[in-house]
Image (cartoon, rainbow, N blue to C red):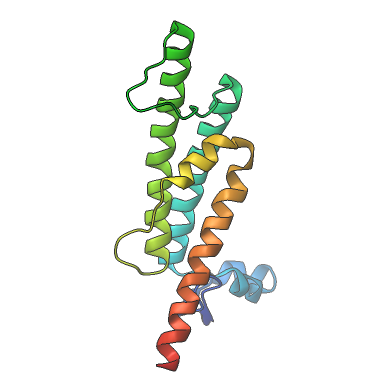
Length: 159
């Protein structure tokens, strides 16, 4: 049985194919409200995977007690072995977060059908500074990205 529906994420029209055996079990139309197109489902899975990786990185940062490096004067190096080790841990954690947040920014760009990504060094730095609030930071980024996209669409519609 085929049923017309709209993707619950992007509202594009899709056709949902419901197996006849499932239809015999009860109300097959309950599935219609859960329907997503392949593109949205794939992007959702990518987002989940990136967020899981960021969660694991933040968990490691919290467990290791890694703190962001304090600003130093240009050319100034950490002096003691403990300072050097802390500096290296912080730099390594920041590199991981940079890679993951760039992947997240690219995902957001793909979601909004943009070419290129909008990424700022402040995003991984904010997560490194407050790793317990990584989800709030990413949600704020995602909402900001979507708000800008909606504003651009409204400007194009009125122009």
